[in-house]
Amino acid sequence: MKLKKWLIGLLITFGALFLIFKFIAWPYMQGETKKISPQKVATYTQNGMDLSVAYSSPFKKGRVIFGELVPFDTVWRTGANEPTTFTTKTDIKIIDKELPAGTYALWTIPGKDSWSVIFNSEVPEWGVTLISGGKETTRDSENDVLTVKVPTKSLSSELENFTISFDEANPVNLSLSWDETIVQVPINK
Image (tube, rainbow, N blue to C red):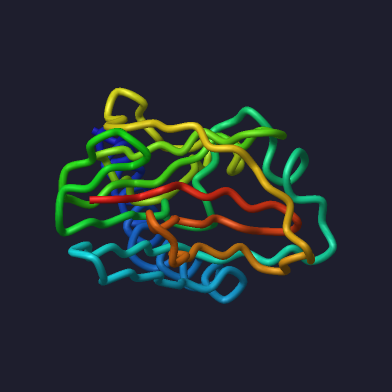
């Protein structure tokens, strides 16, 4: 009987610790990381397109970004905190590939000369696993809807914070830039 009471007490203790972590510690940690990497939104509403990207914008802070902080040839959550989301209210084309209207997690695989840009139908709660210490993403490749490869370009000056924007061109470009690197993903209807 004592063993049963002990096991019930142990179960209640672990349950309480889990609830404290889930409802107090986890939201607190998420709020703290957003002070370091603030949330931003880029929008484009022209030419029959209604596009938006929600992301967290980390800062360079004297670090070597691509190839070190963000390793080459490894999936990146494309920002910080939660995965970056790309939303289109209409069907569009990314380069020459169809992307149906919807919200997608935007993952990238940065390389020295080119990046793979991945639109994934699953938007997980957080961008990396805690067990890996933030080195492994929560992306499930089986939910990849579209992947394109785009070349890297050099910026004329160093950019302190990671920035996503829509650049007016024909077609419009989804631009991802940080440090001395920019990649541009052509989007059209």
